[in-house]
Amino acid sequence: MSNLHKQLVKKILSANKTNLIERFTSSKELPLLLADLERHRGLSYGDLLGMGTSCIAFRKNNEVIKICSKHIKYLHHNSKSGPSDLQKRVEPLSEWLVPMKEIIFDGKEFFVYTQDICQPLDDKAVTTQVLDRILDIIQGVFASELTVGQIKPKNVGFVNGKLCLFDY
View 1 (cartoon, rainbow, N blue to C red):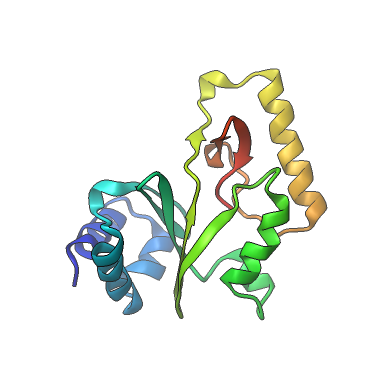
View 2: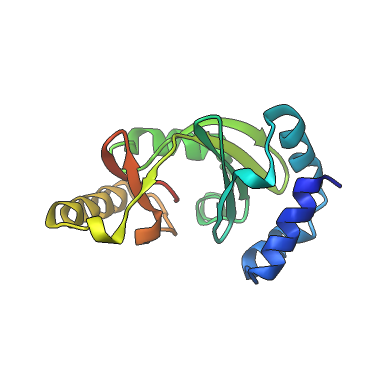
């Protein structure tokens, strides 16, 4: 078991993240995946950005590395699809969503991809223009008929000066 795995499990349990506890802490695939990311990508606990409902994000070498459970709405509603299908589906929506750059792992329980770094939206920076843009993002995603479970203010940020949804 890798050091990163031990630290992440401890963090997940202490934060009482129910979905992550169910999907991440008892996985047999995760320890091997994390050991591989430590070895080949230099990932460490200090790179941890945050933990969501079904994903853990790290910042490494000017990009975000996301470890995602395969128990997400898109894959659930599109049972014959995989992460590469999600990547293809999101790409044309890059006006509203931060695209997946590269899928670096596709396993039985998890997939891992890279994404451009976002500057999360600061509550103090919310203006009429920002609110208009958030509505534009919501409209664009809904019009695409993409099942998105994470349209929350904490998942919106700036990439190259453009406000986008970075967690979907």
